[in-house]
Image (cartoon, rainbow, N blue to C red):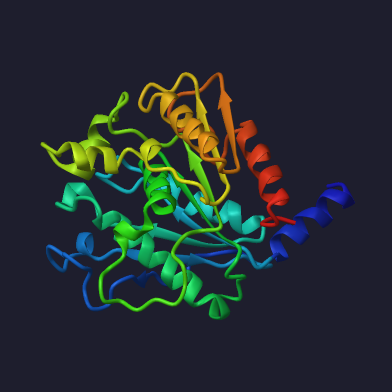
Length: 281
């Protein structure tokens, strides 16, 4: 074996491995509106600590049509972000398939942000460098977190930090409940017969306002599950409200293209953007 390759292998084997910490129960005394006390009623936040922290953090929200948690969008991406020096927190939130409707999922995301930013010193992270990243329906939850965090605030809970992240990453996101809606996500989030007010409230392209944090979003033109128009609608709304953003549309690939283990340009594009934002060195 060539000496250079041997040295590379030895370095790789001796490097500290990243691994998940013990999951944190978001609501130790029970979530607001909890329907039971089984695992499906108990949202959690799982920390992933990098071998070498750079002070930035990311709340990671997997997709699953609000009917499940797609684990392929959880730990693999947490470990990839760890490699970039970010401290990562994976949110496993309450689901429509367990009887939870909007804003229960947003309440979990807001509480996650409160806990991450409120314990920034403990986790050795910069409270002004906390982002959020979501996939598919998780991307929709990200958009509601930056658009309408107030919907997820529990009355009577005194908070001294903001739940709004410092940047947002939306990967092939569900956005609209009106234009080409993703039927399962809409049903799981809003129920069988939602009123018009709720449909508009959960259509994220209608809820953008000036002052939102910078956004990176990407989609593929061939996505057959969530049409590319979702990302385009959200980008148009961001543009109209002067919110800094980048929209990346890739020609080829179906829903979920670019998962860890495949070669896709979005990884490099995202790293370039994160470096410009001071999240990656």
